[in-house]
Structures are given as C-alpha cells and as structure tokens.
Image (cartoon, rainbow over all chains, first blue to last red):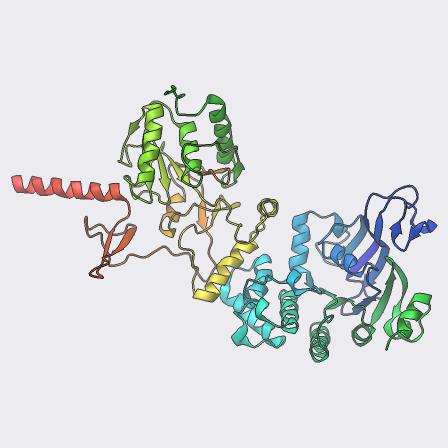
Length: 279
Length: 288
C-alpha cells in the first residue's frame, strides 16, 4: 500500500521561554525532563514528527505534562509553534507549510478541514448559545448563509450523537458532561472534516457514557472514513480506538508502532512501565 | 466670571485631532477609528460623540438641526442646540431640508437627505461584535480578519428562538462589502436610508472613543440569511393620528386610562410640515 499521508508533521517544536546556550542543543541532556534549569525554558514539544494516513486513527499516549495537549493545540493553531512544519494533502495546500500560513488561511483550514473535540467542552462550545447554534457556528464560519439548510444538517448531526431533538435549542451548559461532549463531537463533524482531533474526549465521563462516546467515534470512523488523532492517557481507550500509537514522554516521541505491538511488546522502559501499570 | 469660549467650544488642536479621525473614518468606510474623546459639558452617553463631531466640523455658515429619537424639542436636543449656538452663533433650524448638519440620536429623518448635508449619529455601542466577544483586542482582530461568524451566529440564534431576527434597532450592516458596522440604534426602518445615501453619515461614540463613517454613495447592506431576508418594521394599515401620513416610522402611544392605542409620526418636524401643508391647502380652498 502506497497511500499518501493526509497530514505530515515534521519537527514540531514548542518551547516556552527563549532558551539559552545550555539547552539550545536539545540532545545534550542538559534538560531536567523538559525543563532547562539554567534559563527556565520549558520544551513542551521537542521535534515531533509523524504521518497521519487517510481513514486511520492515530493514538497518542503519555503521562500528564508530556506535551500531548500542547501538540494538539499547535496542530489546531490554538497556539503558534516555535518551529516545525506540517503539510496537509489538499489540492490547494500542496507543498505549503500550514504553520506559516496567514491567520485567515489557518482559520479556513480549521473551518473546512479540521474538527476538534477538546477535553473540556467549555473550550469547544459556546455555553450560552443553543446546541443547534453551536453546530451552526462552524457551518456559518465555513460560509453557509442558509438557515433551513444549517438547521437540517445540525438536526441530523445531533440525532447521530443521540441528543434528543426536543433539547436542541437548549444551551449546552444545561447538559450533562457526556451530552456536552457529544454536542462537541457533532460540532466538530458539521463540515465533514477529513481530519478530526480528539483531546482526552472520554476523561471525566462515567463508564457507560464513555462506552457510548467511544462507540460513536468508532462508528464515525467506519462510516465517514475520517482520519483522527486521539490523545489519551487511558490505554484502554487507545487500545479500542487506535490503529497506530505514538508514546510521548517529556515532549519527545519515545516509541511508535501498531497499537497492539506497542501495548503487547513495549520496547522503551517508560512504555513498559506504562503498560504494566495498567490495572 | 464668564470666560469667552473659543469658536465651537473646542480649542483648535482638539478639532484638528477629531477631524483627522473623521477623515480616516471616511477613507475606510465602516472602520471604527479610535479618537481621544474630550471631556464635555454633558455626560458621556448623552451624545458626546456626536457633539464632538458636530463641534469640530461646524463652520459659521452652517445651519444646524438636532434631533433626539425623532423629536426636535426633547431636552437633550435642545441643550445640545443651545451649547452649539452659544459657542458658534450658527443658525438653528427644525427643517431637515434647510440644515447642513443634522445631529441625531437613534433616527434618520423621514425627509430624504440631500447632497452636501451631513448627518451625525450618536452611538452608544459602536462595536457590533461586542455581544459575541468581550475583549477589544479580539474584536479588532476579528474585524481585520473579516471574521464575522459570531454576529451571524447571533442572528441565527434569534431565528431559532423567535422564528425571525429579533434585532429591534441597531441591526448590523455590511459597509462597502468589507466592515460590519453598528448603524447606531436606528430602527431597522432606517437601515435602508444609509444605502447609497446622498449625504455623508458620520457616527460618533464619545464614551467608547470611536468615530466611524459611511461616505456618500456607499453600499450599506443589512445582514440577512438567504432564506430569511431582511425586513423593516411594518406599519401597514396605520397612519399618524395627527397628520395622516403613511409609510413612515410611527410611535405607538397607549392611553393609560382608556387603553386606546394611537399612532403618531416619530419625526416631529416631518409631522409639523405635513400639518402646515394641509392647513395651507385648506386655507387656499376656503378662499377660492
């Protein structure tokens, strides 16, 4: 199989702080975890590279503070990268490093090619707007100006994530955490994005709701063939969803491979520890 | 002690600064130009933005009309007129067609404005995106990036909740196909008067320290979805109980005692004109 990756990320680096002589060469081991003791710079993501293929789910695991969420925020343009490149396989964006595009172009990518589900629904939803309005927001941002059309699309999406339609005009702040998360997923899917980012979507949900949301994600992937990047520190979630898995530690990729391979036969010391501490 | 005030109250430096802001506003239709709003003898929020524009553009030969929600004789309109008159000695009028500068709060006059006239609108809330985003830093950015999805979303929400857009006044407009602008709290009825207007429209927000403008013959398009076109307030079948005019913006007056509703022209000078014309015609016919 010689498929073109839909998203290529090369040497993504995000640092907080200016860096100094001691830490500018990242490989010389002067860092304590991802922190430079002499200048206080934090290297949240250190030269992360990977490919995402069409229709696959890529899992990203790592302990808290390992740079998972920072990486997602960089990819979704919530924060700027310090350096690095990303390429999207799209006729209009061929050969262009998306991190260097103008903010309008970035917004257009977010509205047309990306979907994002945040760990905390507060970030992804406008809590004082109706659920249907939240979904329409993304459609409006993508240039739709037809109310009936947007209403129909939103209804269909809400139905597919099992939100009762009689509550569609209610504000998500009245919803339970699981429902909010499902509204967020519906919003992320509204423009049929080829790439979907899921950041700790099931964390904090109770088990039956978790199963519901995971089912939904799996179904979406099967039905729509959307490529996804799933960040989680829950190996169970990764095992169920992801085809391939990347293990992050201190902002670096320490292991990657097929999920089964990583979980059954971990090579790196940290991954071993992670897998064996699974209850 | 009564000191001699400078012509038009302001010192020349202040006028210059405000005129500069106005020039920039005219050059970029719909863009909110920040300016150093002066301390005025009336409180902020009572028309200081409009007053500052009026004072800095007024000349000795100008004729001024001031209206407050359609009325020439409301306290606020009268005190603004007095202040300008005392410091400039310009002629005051209630006739829309005679005025060269019309300062107005929340209405565009019924009599169509003509070339050479300037209408100055007082604005309480110049930022159409404020309801969506509280931070000025962010709204400025949204304007610069042409990112108006928030305001569309607000209209969408209204349609979802009420079945139609529920902006009573201050319905947002696209100016020259670029900037979304708050037309000041004029009724939707007046929005269309801004489109391809013969006169220059200046808008001033004293408290918010912003000046913006719609130059003559500029496209002003009210925001509306494809399947929910923009509509103005309808007064079908109603007429002014004083002058009998139709197709104008009417105030609804309810008699507290009897509960009877009557309608009356909101634009008082227009109503007076109609009444005068009627009387003249009556007098002429009775003599004949």
